[in-house]
Length: 247
Image 1 (tube, helix red, strand yellow):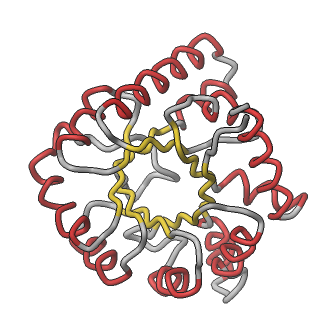
Image 2 (cartoon, helix red, strand yellow):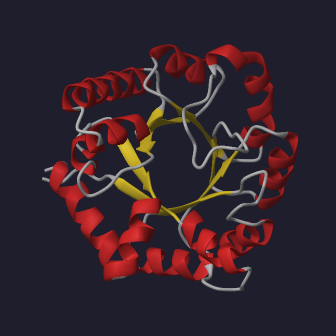
């Protein structure tokens, strides 16, 4: 029997292509609606402080037009908190953000910023958003996420994927064990467990097989694969691999 595992599709890099030419196309909303029609369970978009891909108007359009949940990825700044409270997405995923990074490099240090983050997420929770903390498979960060009142942790799978593609398989397997241990602890503390970052057809199955994980958020690979086979087909194949891993 297949256990349900949700797929959130991140549409950031449709906006990256749009912004490369400063044009009105391709439309992140169109991609999101296509993903919704193809069976995505949710849409993720990261409104970065430098607006390098998703824009404020994209977030408003996504919220107004999607029938599936919108997951708003954002840094823990006052500006982003204001926008999230105005947008009122289904979920908010808090991530570390550095201007010079190409993509999110690691997880939040929740344990080292516990008092500030407790206060920061309070109005988001009061507004009805499910607050998720994007963390590495560090048990201290899992415990701190539960302590501050987060509903969800999203485990950063980027290091696991990097180790796989670098051929460092023993280290990859150790990182997978760490992800499994973190997922077990998070679930035991009452947190819903998600995972994402860098997942591909080659790397998704072992993560999807972790029973405590309820949702995977995948974007860059799906959009890249869509250049060759189309978005619907790229999502369908990822969905198939996820479901196969849960059998």
